[in-house]
Image (cartoon, rainbow, N blue to C red; front, side):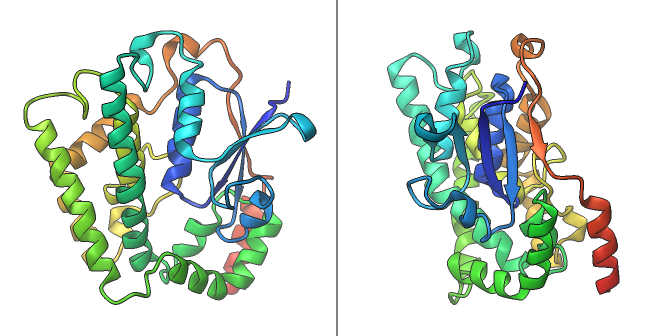
Length: 287
């Protein structure tokens, strides 16, 4: 039975990883359609609230509902979890406000600066093709290969990577937020908001994940050993921080479907169109 929910994503976006994680954790059956960064706008245009990803499209034609942002998708997924203790947003109003405040902070400050810092290093590395096109249909990847010099320049400018000192300023913001999380965890609490895993932890882990490259990340990221030297040294340092270790622990212990829903739903699927072998041959010819 086909799912009537489609998650539209692009590249290695940490916001898409956040949405994907929440849906999978709650056992929501959906189909993920991945697109090449920039080209994804052809598929999100007309869905409302800009052309960014992720977007969760539910239903069809006149009955279609579109969730536009990752926090909306998290709240939708949370409604599918029966056990209150497992929900990402606690029922207690004060705790819920605290969780949402941290989620907002990570969404608006951590995510953009992690993305900018990473792309400042990687956009003109060989791995950028895989980052920008992973999981997309074959035809899109072919166009992505042809247009890669243009796509790199568009993304570089759109993320303000071309501004003087952009990489250094973004790293300062990221390190400051990691230090804040270090200080929160210093009192021995297991999670950012206290004794339970919440949307604050999921958001911090998903958006901060590219800084420490957890093996369980839901999109392909280059290994630290494959990154430029300066970038790799920074990532290794952040990995050793309490906040970095928190991300690695969260991915190791929480990046899975809740046991209560494991047997109740169909698995999610990523629509990749079976092109990997063909594209590898095509890319080998370009070397």
